Image 1: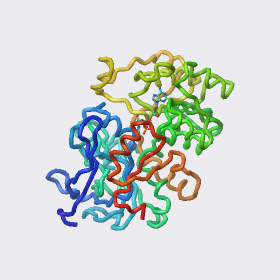
Image 2: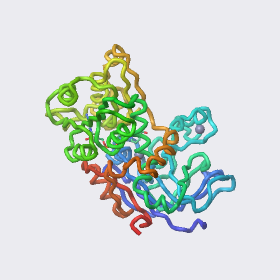
Image 3: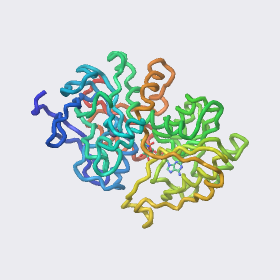
Image 4: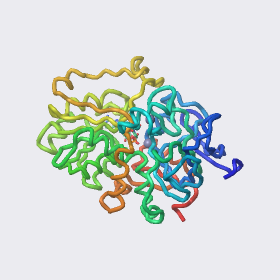
Length: 399
Ligand code: NAD
Ligand code: ZN
Ligand code: ZN
């Protein structure tokens, strides 16, 4: 592939603004170094995520010009010299975490905190602020390093295209929702509360059902998103009401506590009740401790940041929240935070999709759009649409 081949991608311009621009065609290089362990992908699908919204809402230090996109599925068009087991033509899912496969954390399966892919801190991702400066994949083409380690190859390219709307969710939100439930201890018979009915919350709710939960309750303040959760068998609570969360849960199950709690909201959490227009970054964490039974577990895939220049109070600007940890301690709660190590789950969840056991695209309501429709997709998603927007940059899915 020549370096004059063209490429286009979604670029962050500043708060509230993304545009589709010509960007460089990817090369098998990292700065001045060759990247012989990498591949170039022609992108088949690439999804817009709530994590992107934190940047686009201007709530991070993301620089103007950042090419966005960390949820990538594609076809290999070029392999570096040292790639041994991935071949041109393979259709692959790319875990959003970039991992070297060689460091202590990667060897322990903790690929969300790889030590070698981001000079600033453990953990990296494509197209994300503070995540190592890797070029994003809401584009036509992208480079993936350490390809043998990172990529999940689908068994059959034609079958993959038939199920692409489900398989595209393996790069992030299906594993992330599943990980949220696993780390919350969800199993057969669990009563689970999921905070947030965005795509991650809905993926967590679908995962809880896959794991055998007896009752899955989803809370949000957006009626369409709650209706989406009900469409596949969840109970819901509308947090615009002034009632206490544990009372609303008790009305559903007869018990004011749950076995497992999954925070699919993060630091841009809104207050509940008549105040629901206002941000209250610790509210979900505090309701986790109130609602979860003694000895229960709390999974926290929702994103919390070290720097939040747009926060309402000074402590929160540096990631310090007012959390009532004494209550969690008294109830012997376990908390699990951080990026989902996608690779831990993506193969099994792929099998669940391919064998018809997981209708994840339906659960999160996948909506396909073209690359040129990406700015409108961002705007609709920010407005609370009950949809997961998936970009089809080459029109390969539409065809
Ligand atoms: P989203 O913004 O679409 O969804 C968040 C939802 O939370 C919204 O529907 C909002 O109305 C709701 N909400 C706000 N305050 C609430 C409250 N107090 N209680 C209940 N619901 C409330 O985002 P998403 O794409 O679904 O992602 C959710 C979170 O997961 C984001 O913070 C995202 O960054 C994070 N994330 C983490 C990982 C990971 O690896 N840990 C991966 C992907 C996404
Ligand atoms: Zn994501
Ligand atoms: Zn590593």
